[in-house]
Image (cartoon, one colour):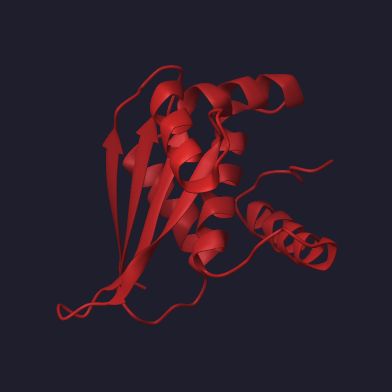
Amino acid sequence: MKLIVDTRYAARRPWVPRPSQFARWARIALGRQAQPARLSVFVVGAARSRALNARYRGKHKPTNVLSFAGAGNCPDGLREIGELVICAPVVEREARAQGKTRQSHWAHMTVHGVLHLLGYDHERVAQARKMAKLEIQLLDKLGFSDPYA
């Protein structure tokens, strides 16, 4: 599958992944999609994350990842999957608090965000179980351990 990942950085500290890492993680989450696709990843700081989270979710605090659906099929043949907005300081803080490596938590947030773009959710218990099970399987394919253990 051809996947174009447009990566922008408004924050680079603490450590953030390279564009190629985001692309690898997103490909695994997208699975066997046949149509060429484009995904945007925007790495931000706490202030931008807080502002977006307040505007779109009514929560006045920064969050680890926000997912914004894309336009779908475009005239150029690409499927616009959407955009992930990932907050570097929140991901760093969570990784440290949960005893995870930075890389494994970034991979988890990328996979988690892409699954949201594919229609998965965790608002209800059954949905959360289904999404978590898939995240565990996908992260295992990437060589990472269960993010919920």
